[in-house]
Amino acid sequence: MGGMSLVHWLVVAVIVILLFGGSRFSNMMGDVAKGIKQFKKGMAEEDETPVAPTRLEAQKPVEPAFTPEAERAREERR
Image (tube, rainbow, N blue to C red; front, top):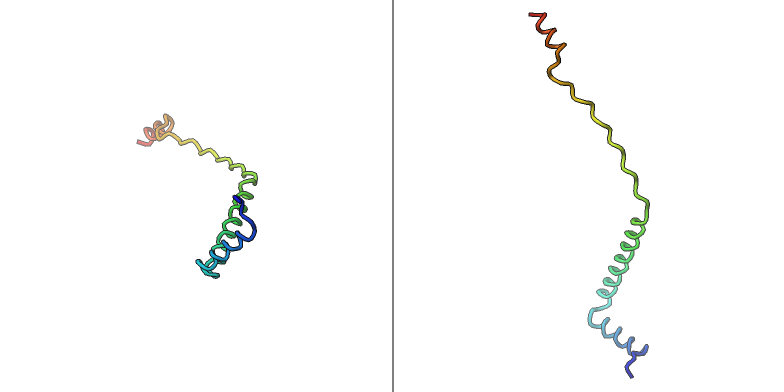
């Protein structure tokens, strides 16, 4: 008595279609199908191997603004 038979499910399905209308019900099912496809696509993308990050090149060292050689050259020009 507690179980739902196929006839019960068919009656429930007919009532749902009558309440929501055929086009609205089909639109909802289409949205569910799109959601499942997006979920499967997301799961497939997650399984792909990640690309190794590229190595950043080191910047050239900054030359000091003051060097003894440059200071001597300035002194000689004066």
